[in-house]
Structure formats: structure tokens, C-alpha cells
Image (cartoon, rainbow, N blue to C red; front, side, top):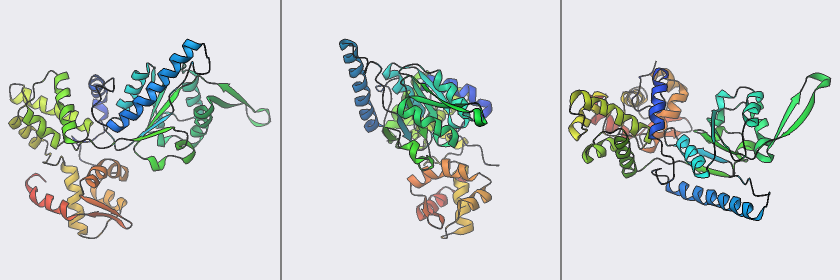
Length: 351
């Protein structure tokens, strides 16, 4: 069983409802409030403004063709915690559209998807999280829905079965995935816009931390803001979670104000080092160094020796460790770098 992680981008089930309420209050609603990802925002602004312009022109001219003009389907991809769900909400808000949210694993049968699609209204935005986990039968129903706004369903079984094509309202699908390569080619090709969310810069994370503290009515000093930013793995979700945990520490062990000493003691208590690595990250690196040294090790072997699932390592440990140059992917497996070894030796007291 893996170590529970304060910097994990997943939410434990028992805290999920409470965390979701807090997350909703922290989510920006417009491009102006959304910090970072400037290139993606600029491209999306142009596309949304174009749709609004076509709708306004059609309304003025009485042209039914563009009256219900919709945004092209959008695929958002990148590591977890970078704001894919938040961006979907911002897009819907900027369009003035209703946002319907579901996920790939939640749509078990083609009938489930048909029920969702037939309940959409013109201009609605359908957000499908973890879209790479859609079943193949469900994907095939989605193809014609995305391309032609038609729903092909089969009624009956055997010789009496017949195919029926239903009209659907014009809508936009926003898909989110951490694994673009796992997406079927025909589904990926039906997205008119593909945007990768990149890791944030430190100044951007500092802005997010300051905004979060303000929303939570917590005073935070600039030095503490910078300290938290350096240990947030350049990920907004982690930054927001650290702010909440450090706020708790400041309320119990201080006067509620987050300054550098309070932030340092709270982060030390959570065993998060100066690069944002937690005990699970350091345990992974240490086992790679002690057991394999300069030899590569396979993902399944890593999962076995750490007690984590392979998908957990691949989705939550690796992206950041690769980003900072602590591990390398080779044809023969994962390889720990000299940079990572040096970091482990410098942080033995917190391993």
C-alpha cells in the first residue's frame, strides 16, 4: 500500500465531497481570472469570439445556418492537476453555455451516452474527463454525435433489430486526458482543437497561491508565497492544497498568518522537501538507486518494489520527476539520474 501523499493530485474518497466544494470556490470563471496557459487562452479566445460573432451576425440577418453556431470540439491533455476541468468551466462560461460534466469510466454502456446526449440543449458544452477510458462501443456512438450531431441507435435484437438515426442539438465536447496516446485515432481526429496544458512557472504559481489565500481570507506574506510556490511541483492543484494545509497549521500553531517560518515548519511536518518531493517520491528514487544503481528498471518491477500501482507511478510520480530531470525513460526501463542521486544525498534527513 502506497504512502498517502499531500502532493498527490488525487483526492481521498472520504474527503472528496469537502474538497470538491472548496475546489469549486477556488476555480476561476473567466479567462481574466485564469492564471497561466497564455498561448492556449489566446487561441481559445479567438475561437470563442468567432463563434459569438457568427451567432450575432446570424441573429441580425435572420440566418438559421449560423444561429446555433458551436465551438469546435476541444481536447485538453497534460499531467493531472494543471486545470483541465477548470478550463472547461471557463470555456462554457465565456460562451454563455451550460456545462454538463461526466467522465469516461462513468459511461459504461452506449445507452448511458445516448441518455446524456439526448438531454443536451443547443449550445451546451459536454465535458468528458478521462476520455481515454471510454469503452469502444461508447466511442463508436460518440463518433457520429460529434461529427454530424446525429445519434445512431439500434432498437430490438436479432432479425427484428433496426437502426434509427436521431437528430441531436448542436453541442461542443471538451475531452480531458492525461494519456493522449491511449485515445483511439478516430476519436482524436474528431477534435478540432487540441491543447496541451504545460507546467506553470513559479511566478504563476505564486499568483495562484496569493489568489487562493485571499479567497480563503488568510493573510500570507510574500516570502511564504514564494516558499510554497517552490514546493508545489508547478501544479495549481497541489499549490491550493498546500495553502489549505499550511493555513490549518498556522491557525493551530500561530496567529493564522502564514509567514515563512510557519510555512517552513508546516512543510517539514509534511516531509515535503525544497523541490516539492514527498516521502513517496524519495522512496521511489531511493529504491531505484539502492537496488539498480545505474541500471534501468521496468515499470512493473518498480510497482512491485514500491507497493504502488504501475499507473500511479506513471501518472503521478513520473511526469514531474521527468520534468526536473530526476529519472529518464529508456527502451529498457526507468533510469535514475545523477541529479536525483545528489538530491537524495543532500536530503537524507527527510527521507
